[in-house]
Length: 228
Image 1: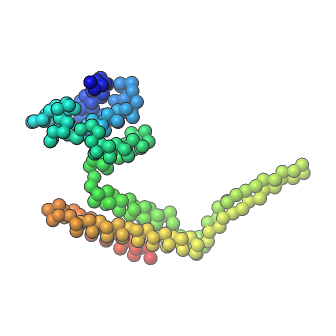
Image 2: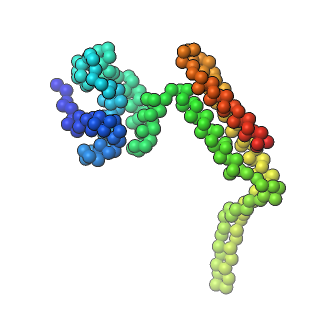
Image 3: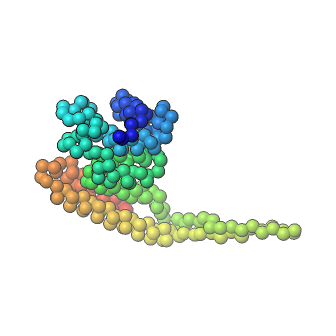
């Protein structure tokens, strides 16, 4: 005879459903007086996100033993899918924000979407770097204290300071090298995105996909024209 299901396990599920699926595991855990990691484990193992909004038209009730192995009854506990996703999830830090991002990426994003987000982040960092790496003119020198030592004696005290100096040409050369490497990486990601679009079945290719590529290429040309 199997172990009985914990009352808190069922309460946690009901609380989540009654909140229109918006309650965080941490909030549920606080109300039940248990750990948030336990609630997240139940949510993953019991596949809360797979529960339909409306009652099933056929098949055994949720978590009923008769559903095990039945088509349409959901993957049984210990199923390969649960193991595959649960293995990585298990080792993530106990952080609700991190877990929420992980679940959103796993359940709601395709590889094409993930790659596009990576492209956007890379492009954002390139644009942001323009301001950080800006060199005003040939006299734009940066002088920073690298390390300092203090010496004291009965008669006197002194301080030895070592500076790190970056001249305009050094900063500009590093900026151009970094810019070129970042642009190459971004261009490769965009080419990969285009290749993925070409491998999609025609019915799955959206106009939005093509427009994303065209816009990104235009933005890159604008940045390159300004940078060089």
